[in-house]
Length: 529
Image 1: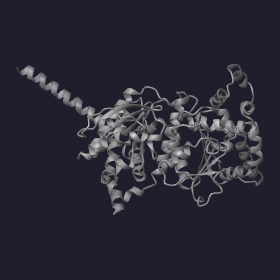
Image 2: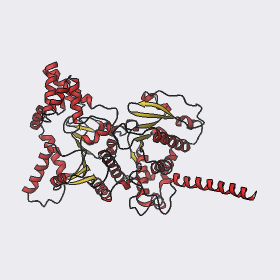
Image 3: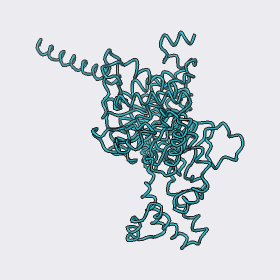
Image 4: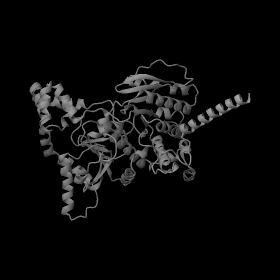
């Protein structure tokens, strides 16, 4: 019997060892040499917005919140004795998963255990169910929303929840599963600051490896890390402002410029031959021709009004993109955009108590002097008649835009303007940049300061040659790096997430709160005392 017993013992020991190794990898146990994050792995994003409104491929909600979002509740075992996660179909383009976490907690069960089980189960379901993004991302996005209601169930556990979810569940999932990204959307401001601070400390201090930048930010080149830190220092010095264009909204399933024209032409019943001929005209003449069709069909005033309203309707969406959520996390007070839609504003207002002021439309309103503002350079869907698209619109705009040009020129002189999703092809921007350059040349100033930074998806040496005297040109992918445009766009999201972490780590309002004591090291505990 001895050989048989020895064989059984060996097999049992082998199973125990195997389970131990899986647990070590699963729980991300800290060792002297942490795992090196590779570029093809998943990424974990942190935002401070309403997670239900983020353009994601799947979303986890509590069953009690389903009615609020008009989601039918499928059958699930009631009683709250165990945590369940059930598939509940789709809401627009997002697959919905429901859990009974609140009911589970009401029955006296541990919140941390229930939340960990729900999120772990949800992420496993999402990685199996979603193979392709509905929003044009190179990897699908799984979103989860830590609401104030959930965090308030046991406030003294807030720090432990943040630590457990990131360290023991979400980061191990992303490390072991490379097919889906995760967006952790935290409604509570202090919990969000604590999560960002903890992530920064893990990444740059507590997991030293041969790779200087471990974990999911390792997909960024070292020079991008340095650029992120430089931009964060400019923000902390209150000299960083934002200018974003249409590229920011692409992952919210908004139409491209050509797609917008096609929608307008289809509405006015232009045939395929006319659509083909339309493409041969100048980019300002194409919408002008379509507007004339509206006028011919509905009359002058009504036709022009309907044309602008159709533009506003074409860029309406129930979501804002992950990029909008990440940009809001930069907490910038001066923002300029050529976009019509209000997705940035919706992301900003989804968790902030204050509203953002829209210029020039809100200039006449009282009690808004200290509010953050966004300058809608080409109009806004809130006021469809303000939208700039046709040649006539641009002619009128040139005659009346001196005040807005003055604001832009002021930012170029006094701030460092960060351009995202914008190709610098707009004539008004070129005029403003040239005016500032002429001013500096005329004053015999030693011009060593750049007016801003331009974040590009792929390296373009001719573009850099044209603009590098005025701006720092930063490419997410160099010419020799592999990957298509969607992968470069994902890398831009990761870079903005990194920039947000570098900025937010300075916000330490959570440090004196008892519920976050578990996140503090010994030195920080001494400072707190």
